[in-house]
Length: 601
Image (cartoon, rainbow, N blue to C red; front, side):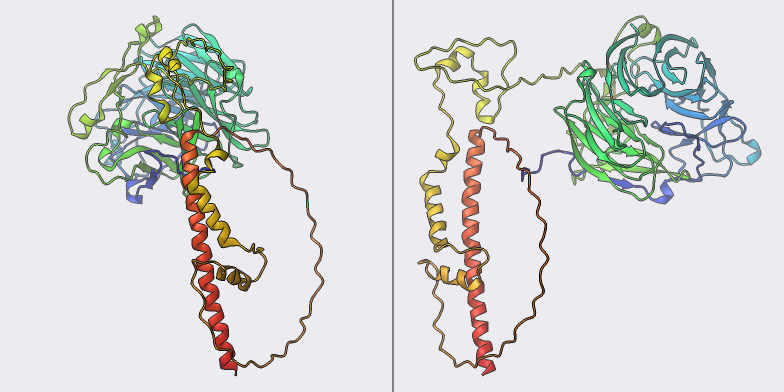
């Protein structure tokens, strides 16, 4: 393991829970066992699946009305079965969709100046739906709005289908037939692809408008539900699930080749039984995992097809649902990069701010890149007609300064494909190497190699390249030899580890550069009676043979060689200082022994 800590802007991110007066108390979260996040949030409201009688209902809570809620609040009623999931329209903060056990999808609009603090109570009125979308044959489990096109909604059902709706027309225009129950699905960055996880333990990537499967393969092997999330503009998926032994796992997948298996294998998390609810922040490239039934929230940084665990928010309060706020609604003056809302004991909702600790009070451009604006790039007719576009972005610096942020078109970020490195044998003496032709520029493996990478191939071949030094040859330099000889002389004669400290002191007395111990006047000592110690037989310890594992050896780069030489010099100097400290300790022990002997006389 490297002794150097990996550099990251988000290595010290910490989660800060809100005080109780800023939580949302007196909540009655639905007890339905369907696997969903139970709550969703946007920049103005939180929607909560409500435990209500007389049909399904959910509550909408304004973010400004924290504290203890009234015992009776206006609910959004209209379903004949429990509400299983909700989702906010990313382009209109007042439009919300709901999925219900009655097989219907509801479209709702939050009334203007909506509040939960109704007085008198006789004026309390529930809110009805704007429209109900019918088409599924069984219960609807999940709903997600399209990330680019306005008024396009996707819903999954227990009838093994995903339907894409034009909510203005009230019709399902696309139906994706699955072979088994859908446990989760997610749009990609531009909304042209949908990734699904199913009860048959397979992951599928669909081209929505052609209604064809782009890639398909086996996912997590466990019997419990899996979740999927798209990693922003990258062609990668992240899934959470379980192994056959019910261990919680996380995995990365190449969306163009799911059958090849997870990239880098499965990451083992723990053995807890709750489903992990993932959330990916494309702006910071961080993945957040909240487990159902436990209070902790892990967060990882994604880079170069690897997940690096940053830290973990720990809490003793268990959660069943979680929601995340859009980036444009965060408090950038406190360097808040993510805000989560989690349900606690199904009785209140607790906001948690994830903050980058910095003292600067100015806008931090490196942790706040341009984010999604919340403005549609396409209409529903344009998208169903085959047109594609990227989400529109805004600059967060304008919001930080209190100015109006103007949306602008996003540009597609092409992911650089790493060039595989291979060992090339040296040419025979006298042989002339043929010029190599490559369709992509070479990737430098070290800072020293970065400059020649920009030179044309022909000029690089004409320039003689200095061969790399071998480690054993480099260790034979004069400076290293002198340090090793000095350490060798200080260690002679060789002292076994299990000898007494007095033997080490005699070895140090032979060194020329160490101070001599002052002569001590001999003192008459009286013999001390010694009693034999009773010894008990020691039971033999069973020893097991240890399997030797081969050590992977890798070629050493020139930069690594210099760092190893400097590390070796530091270790030798440190060894000399330790030996000197031991010598001084032995001298003090000898003086104490002499003083004890004189006092006993």
